[in-house]
Picture 1 (tube, rainbow, N blue to C red):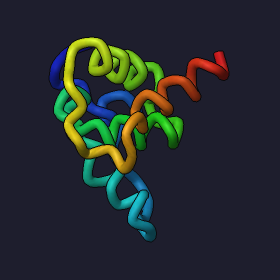
Picture 2: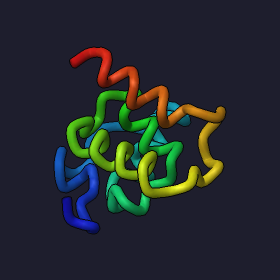
Picture 3: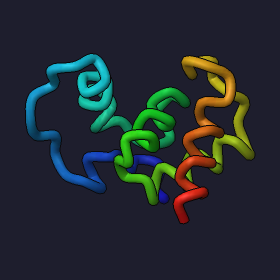
Picture 4: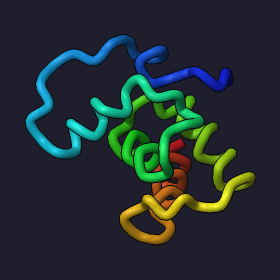
Length: 89
């Protein structure tokens, strides 16, 4: 995975409205490199099934190599998103 890869590189440019706070947060992070996203946005994209293949790799890397950045809404939110996806495999 390259350090500049963003959701927009995987799924293309954003299209559509942003009527809710959740969608607005996703829109604002759409062009941000995956490695630069905060833990909350990685969990959010995973929970919304957005670019899951790439973000799951990034999330696992974070869990192994980085301390949490305290942006999650609750402790363990990123881990919960990872486990939810893995339980579907």
